[in-house]
Length: 579
Ligand code: AMP
Image 1 (tube, rainbow, N blue to C red):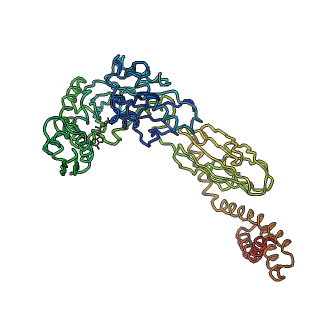
Image 2 (tube, protein in one colour):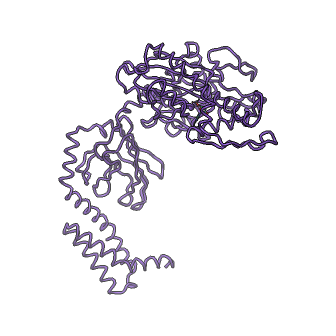
Image 3 (cartoon, protein in one colour):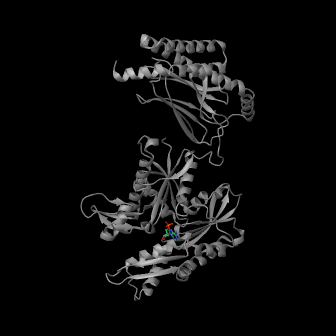
C-alpha cells in the first residue's frame, strides 16, 4: 500500500487530513477524536519540541506569546513569526510542522493498512488566489514535512469535487461561496473536460465568523451596561456560542455569572436580534460576489450550481443572502467544514487510482464463498453485496490429525461446491490435532477495483496464505450470471436435498463412532433395555445412510440423539466424579 496519497486541507484556523480507504474518501481523526486540527503551534520556552494542534491552542491563554496561529496569511513572505531553537521561524517552517502533524495523524490511523510504513505522498489545497510564490512555499512546507506534494489544488475546486459537481455537463459553471472563521472567498469555476477552471475569484482575507463574534460580543457588552471597546473575553466566547446555537434555534439564553468577579449578565437573545447585529458583516460578502460574477462575465442565472463551504455558511442569514445574490437555492448537502478536505482526498484518490470505480457503486453479481465439509458451498459474500467489502468466517478441521486445509474460492448460487465455479484454490497448513481443534479464519476482501483477495489464517500460528483474483469476482458477463441464477432456481429442490443429505451424513459420521465409544466405556453399568434402545437407534441410522433418504436420515439422527440422552448424562457424571 505504498501508493496511498493523503488529501490535506491546510487551513488558516483548522487543518484536516484524509485518505481513500477501500474506495471511500474518509477524513481521519487525531488522538483526541477530532478531525479538525487547529493550525496552531506552541514553541516551548525551554526544553522540548514544538506542539501542534489542540494542545498548542490550549496554551494560548497561559503562554500566548509562544503560540503561533494563522500563518497561512503570511505564506510566501519572509516575515519571522517566532524565534526558537536559535533560529527564525517563518510561515513556511510553521506550516511544515502542521503538515508533519497531519502526516502523523494519518499514519497512526492507517497503521494496519500500511503495516507501520510512512505515508509519503500528498495533495494539498490552497486558496484560488494564491500566487506562484505562495503555492511554492506550500509545496516546500510539505516537502519539509517528508511529503512528496503530488499536486496543489485550489480550495474551491476541491469543494466542487466534494459536492460531486464534476458530474455536471461540460462547461457547467458553479460558484463556491466559502465563508470561514477568518476569511471569505468567492470563486466562479467552469468545468471543462472534467477539469475545473477558475474563471474569477474575489474575497477578503480579513472577513469571517470571528468578525461576527466581535460584533455580537460588543452588542452583548453594551446590553450589560459596559462601555468602550474593551470587551471581556468571556463575552467573546458567549457570542460565539450564541451564534452557533442560533443557526439552529430561534432563541438562546446568554448567561455570564460574575463575569468581572461581581457583576452577572443574563439575557435571552433571539435570532432576529442576532441577525440585526450580524447583518453588516454578512452583507460585506455581497459586493465580492457581484464582482466575481462580473469578472467572470456572467450573470447569476448562468450558474448551474452554488455550493457552500466554511462553518459560517451554517448561519441562516448567510444562506438567505446567497439565495438572494445568486437567485437560487444553494447546495448544502456537504459538511461545510469538511468539503475542501474531502475534495482534496477525492483528488488524491483519483491520482493514486484508488477511486476509479467511485462513480458507479459496483455489486457482486454472484455469491462468493468456499467449499466446506462434505462438498458444500459456504457463502461468505452473498450476491448483490456492494463493493468494496470485507467479510470472514472461522473454519475448523473435519477429521483428526489433518495437517492442512484446502481453500477453494467459489462463485455461484448452487448449494454444492462442484456446481459452482472455482476461482482459485490453495492449501493452508496447520498443526494436526483432534477433529474441530484447528481454527482457520478465511477472509474475502474485494477492493474498489473488483480485485478479490482471499486470505486464510491459522489463528494458532498467525500464519497467512493469500490468493489474489483479478476482477473475476465482479466482472462476470450478464449472460453467465443469468444462466447461473436460472440453474440455481431450477435445481433449488435437489440442491436443498443435497445440502440436507450432506449435513445429515456429517452428523451421522460424528454420532456413530461416539455412540460406539460410549457403549464400550459404560459396559455393564448401562441397563440392558437402555442399551438395546441405543443399539437399535444406531442401526436405524446406518440403514438410513444406506437408503439415501434425506428425511429418514434426519429422523434417525434425531432418534439416536434422544436415545443416548441417559447415556450421555451418565458419562458426564462419571467425568465429574473422576471415575
Ligand atoms: P471554518 O474556518 O470553515 O472552520 O469556519 C469556522 C467558522 O465557522 C467559525 O467562525 C465558527 O464560529 C463558525 N461556525 C461553526 N459552526 C457554526 C454554526 N453552527 N453557526 C454559525 N457559525 C458557525
